[in-house]
Structures are given as C-alpha cells and as structure tokens.
Image 1 (cartoon, rainbow, N blue to C red):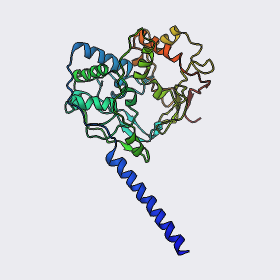
Image 2: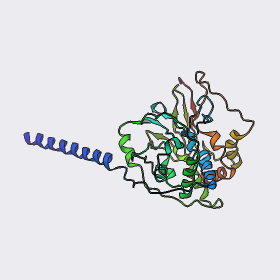
Image 3: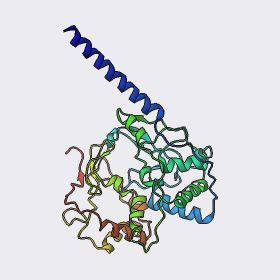
Image 4: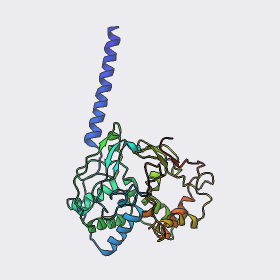
Length: 328
C-alpha cells in the first residue's frame, strides 16, 4: 500500500512539475517573435492616401481605435477621436477579460519605431513584447501585402496627435492569457493581386477580417463554420446581436443576393439622405457593432470583389436569429 501511495505522490509531483515547466515556457519564451526590424517607412502622399483608405474603409483600424457613439446605430466613430482609442471590450460582450483599444495617434506612436508598428500590425506583439488579444485581427493583417502595411504606418504617422490619459491595462482570464501567447506568428505577406485577378476578392475579404465576426466563436475560439455567422455580441442591457451568415447558401445565407444588392446593402449608409438612427437603450432598440458607415466608404469595386469571393466558399445552411431584445 505504501508503495502505491509513493508512486501516486511521485506521479502527482511529476505532473505538477511538467505543468509548471510548461507555464514557465509559455510565459517566458512566447510569443517567439523576432525583435522589430530597423524599418523606416517613407511617408509619401500616395502611401498616406492608400493607408487612409485601408484604415478607415477596409481594415477599419479606426473602428476600434476611435471613440464610438454607442447611442447611434452601428456606433459610428465620434468626430475628432480618430486613433484616440478608448473602446472597451469586456465580459459583458463575451470577451474573456477586459481589453482597451490603444491610442494610435502620434501622441503615443511617436515613441514607437516603424519596425515596432509593423510587428504590432502583422504579428500582434506590442512594443514591450507582450501579445495582443486577437480582437485585433492581426492574423489577417499578417497576410497583407508589405506595401499595404507600410501605407497604414504612413497614415498613422500623418494623424493629428490626440492627447489621452493612459487606458487601463488589459485583464485576461485564465487560460486565455496563456493561450494567446501561442497565437502570434511571423508575417506571411501576400502580393496584392491585380483587381482583375480572381484572388483579389479573397485578399480584400481577408484584409476586412470578415471571418473574425462572421464565424461563431466562444471565448476567442472559432467553433462554427467559417463565415456562417452566429458570433454573439452581448450588450450591457442584456440584448444580443448575432453576426449574419454570409456564405452563398440560399438557406440563411446570401445565396439569393445579387452583386448589386450586396453592394447597395453597404452603400445605403453612405447615401447623403441616410440619417443615422438614435439608439434608445432603455427602450431596447437594436444595436450592432458592425461598422456599416465605415465599410460603406469602401469602393464599389472592392465590395464587388468581396461578393465574388463569398460566392466561391462553402455554403452553410444556417438561419441566424439576428437579435434578442433585453429581458428575453
């Protein structure tokens, strides 16, 4: 009997030791991303223009890194806050912790080198080496053409500096704080295809990170079919909005949509006659984090390319309940 107990104790101690070694390795050795390069991006008018388009209309960096008006439909960025950060993502929205979008204007970024910004965008690693939670879809930006990333950097350098107080540090739940250290990878840049290339639509869809919100996810892990929707966003009043199925299925997806209908669904929000509805939280009005007004400024060609790509992916029959009012 004593021998059995001794063996069990040794096994338990061995398991504990292995676990401690594993945690130590993860926290000390990961993310295993190289130090930032000595990159110096030349800021040209062409790059600033391209970067502004990407950051505001495609990658929509300014969606999270601005202060959003959650009392207006689709929470458009508040004028004068572009790049100032401050948006909070927490457990009430089904995130595993509390995360704050950082100030990415020159007020903060003047202390970052171009190489550090490039590494942050493409590998999700901060200036001090810690990984970002992938609410920032750096695994998509990881595949951006190098010149497109340079353009975003040039645009960020051109922003007006906005002074803000330091935002709280992120608080990350176990075991996500360990898992997220294993996510960052070195960049895998793609050459940006010509607009006439069938692969161009896939490139733009990746840059827009559609898959990140339009795939059912729980605690940061994708568990649903890609782009079949169902990602739940819960608001503080208890209401829930779910992302749409954008696969080419005719049963719950966009299989019956024409390209013109798809494009118009976005361009509606760019129409000069469109008035952004106010959201009354006490009344339980529908709200969405989908940045319609930003994506509406994407070119017709790019929106059409996304549609063309979505027509090629696996159709998934899934009818999504779009909205659950508070108290339901």
